[in-house]
Image (cartoon, protein in one colour):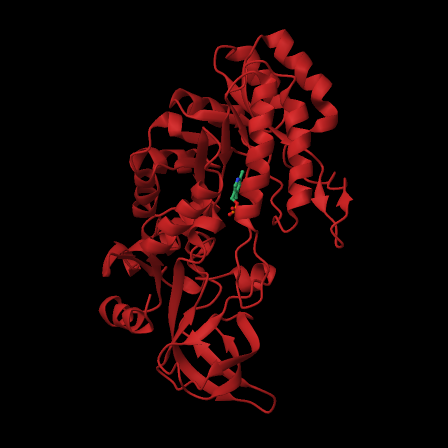
Length: 413
Ligand SMILES: *Cc1c(COP(=O)(O)O)cnc(C)c1O
């Protein structure tokens, strides 16, 4: 997208605003699909929690993606956006049996991540096949050694519990149709990922009726120049080869599934905010934008480094700034960042704002959540209106006479 297109969008729809480039989403989807072209059955299930706007979900559905969901509400959003129930996989963690049953009744695929629920679900619904989330206890060490730590993770059924898992399956006569892993950490070392995959293949041999093996996600995308990203092409080549070999050994063509969130939408997103104040202090220059962690919390929550560009003055000389928000709380987006000279009224563009940005927004400080715009075939399309005051008070019950004198006397009596 051109900076002038982004500036025009702030003029048309106001600021702050999120903008998503449909073309970038499509090219990332195609890139991942291409990397695994030698696998006969590949299924990408977009992780809805990264960016769950209905129009984005429709775009994914249109591309042939499935949907990975982590709550019953995401399941319902997916159905509303036109996904067939069988294209949705429900991968919750720590939710109630009732919620899993509700999802199963809607016809979506179920992924269970603990033995307690597996036993209860299998006992009540032996005819509904389920996938099991496995924790392979593999994680990349600092020097790319393989460490088998990660025992503190709350996710998945430990590989050391496979005997118990098999016992539950045998006793309940339930069917396991898939096995899954998602370690949640970035794939930076492909060999470590392949090592975890071997554990998954080994586990898979215990189940005779598998339809798919789901390798989760963790594809790392670059946030700034020089960042390491997952080498998708190398991963695709190596894992595809091993997967195809495994299918031969297993005796059936299985589906290779992934659940990318960040990889598909992160780089497609831009967050645009206006500089309200440039403030020179004794030690730094602050640029305060009309936003804060109520709109984009990743820098404050886990130190995410979003590149910031002054699109109102992209050729100006560079100076050091601390970019902060307007929330009454420390809400620093960036410290000591070199940015083209900023004047009050300029529009700053935060890059990589597609994944886990809008979906983590809140109404803190009673501010409105921003509008969302999709850039599609060279045109902006509004896909979410900016909130209004009515949205802030929508669910509140303003009990007007609760504190009136007559009621207080009644309460005392
Ligand atoms: C969040 C999540 C993903 C997506 O992770 P990304 O890093 O955004 O690709 C995939 N699978 C599960 C189960 C998740 O919880």
